[in-house]
Length: 213
Image 1 (cartoon, rainbow, N blue to C red):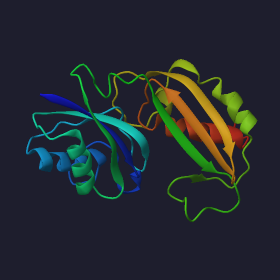
Image 2 (image 1 turned 90 degrees about the horizontal axis):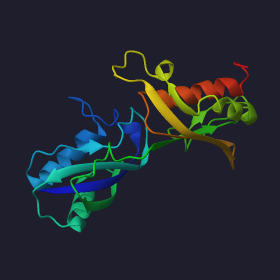
Image 3 (image 1 turned 120 degrees about the vertical axis):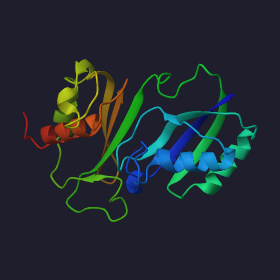
């Protein structure tokens, strides 16, 4: 039995998140359909993290087991020929059974992009959060200091989330300004609760607009 690792890129706009949901278009559902067509097997696909609806991925990691003898380039080219334009397999590798996309992950990195100007963007409207009020990046960076480390982040998770533990460790948060009025917020942690990263960014924005001291 082979274990194969995938590196994925996708535009989350048209997906209801990663995890399979009956009757809804999800990244896992679309990819499993393509894998099962290629292998004629029932495939269990596991990802490093389950992205929420509308969240994009530049390098999502996933793995599956298969008895198929299809070569790696066959999987790469075959999957990309079956997948829609908003989901691409960037790399395929054979790995040992000890590898696990979720458990082997050292950490997960989220990038949030903010367009901080009066007018919105027509081109990037699905890839940035438009905030017309000028943000104080210094205040936001100061606020990040209180989030670094191991904490109970239950107040930052989505309401109604059913997760046993709410303690996570944030290793680093970077905020930098890009050309064209873009602000990048990068959060690196050992894991995230549902909508935790999104809610952290929302809190930092409120600090940046002086809603919070």
